[in-house]
Length: 203
Image (cartoon, rainbow, N blue to C red; front, side, top):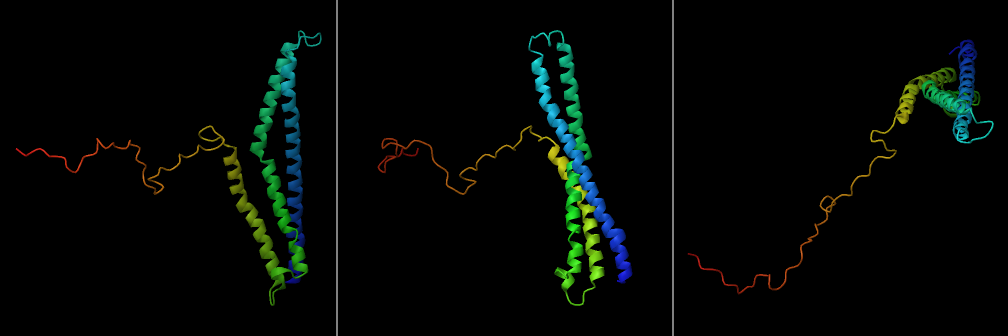
């Protein structure tokens, strides 16, 4: 690959993509942290407002309806924020962008210091650099739908309403390849047929 063309690729493609993934990761991290802090504060205030409604003091007396309204409003806001976190996927995007950025960052150093495949004899370093960078960028677009699908799957409740699946019954002795146990009581000597027992004559 021509050196001038390669330098143009580094400046206009590689560096710009690095800046994009770094900024996008930071933005999604900031949004996720803000959502989480608001959720933590409001979730902590909800039981406080609910408990205050049960105290009969001069300040609270006559304001029970206001406290009940506050509990409802705060609960609704918490539900909206929780749904927003799952819908906009700030945490997943933050992790995905940061992972791609960390994969791209050392590639230019591998190129400059002939590390790994860049040190192989007769290799076209510029073409290899472009191929590896584009592979990283393409894998981010390919892996994101799978990560999103897995995150949605984890958010869904279990079909049986339990956190853990029901335990399977232990296998029977026959299924385990062991002989069955005879639970019938042993026969006494009187019940056992003797060798000298006389059989009735046939008619």
